[in-house]
Image: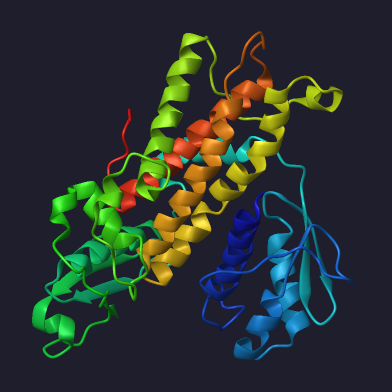
Amino acid sequence: MTPVELSRTVLRAVRRAVDDGELSVVVPARVVVERPRPGGCGDYSTNVALQLAGPAGRPPRHVAELLSRRLCDSPGIAGVEVTGPGFLNLTLADEDPGSLAREILARGGEYGGSDVLAGQRFEIRIPYEVRAEVVADSLRRLLATQGAQAHIVQGETAEGETAEPSAAHVVNLRPVPAPCDPAVLGRDASRWALLLPAAHDRPRIDDEHLAQRESNPLFRVRYAHARTRALTRGAAALGLTAEPGDVRDHDTATGAGDATRDGANAAPPLYTALSAHPQTLTLAATHHAPDRLARHLVVVADALLGFQHTVLPQGEEKPSAAHRARLALAEAAGAVLAGGLALLGIDAPEHL
């Protein structure tokens, strides 16, 4: 279980406690888990009970014990212990090393979706301006991944002058406009140019977004996706199929070759980047910031490009379980890149 998955597990326990009337609080958008500090125990710790105690009108340890009972039976958690004033210390069950890749490949473009905003409606108000329209379109898609419904309103209502009372949450989007018409870049590059900077930053509209080189983040993201497809084709030619598992070759301890050593070292950054995708989607939706997703895709792409050379056997190397696991992780990265680009309204190429 990754830290992001564990955070969501704790959040679900909070939500169930609220739904069952055991706690009367506003469910937070996310829960922070971290390695235990001195005095703690287990694999991870969270202070969520201390945060909720005041709003709930309960002692922190009472809230922690309440959540502990709900977490003990959660899949992937072997034990829960309350320490100090109300810290929850979580011990994880032995984990299948291929669980992340297996989950992503099973869910595809839906990986990272959650019910954090389930049942909530949003009204996104924007002026008649191209960047605002593009940002609002991507935000609407991001909100949907978190279970929310959203519609976009332009013009006078966007300024709040003629708005009717509504149960929807109102989001007033006012990103800094583009300095010139971005249409000259074409659909994909223009959307990227408008979405990558934070809303308060002025976007650059220049040919750099069209450059087929490493200095162009859009090129790296699209190229990384194309490479995952090429790896799948290359593996098929070798009779190699993806099988989620441990990407480490256990012969590395005896010095079995540079390729396997690189594979063992390169996997963690990609694993970390992929496991952070759900939290990225949640934060991009709740903070109304599609730029968070765009920057995260660059991180995933760079991690994949550093990992790709270890996926297929090289030279006289024979296919192994580690190669099949690395191929599964690479294909999972391709699914995350394709799904993320789709949320930004940008195509993910099979060849580049």
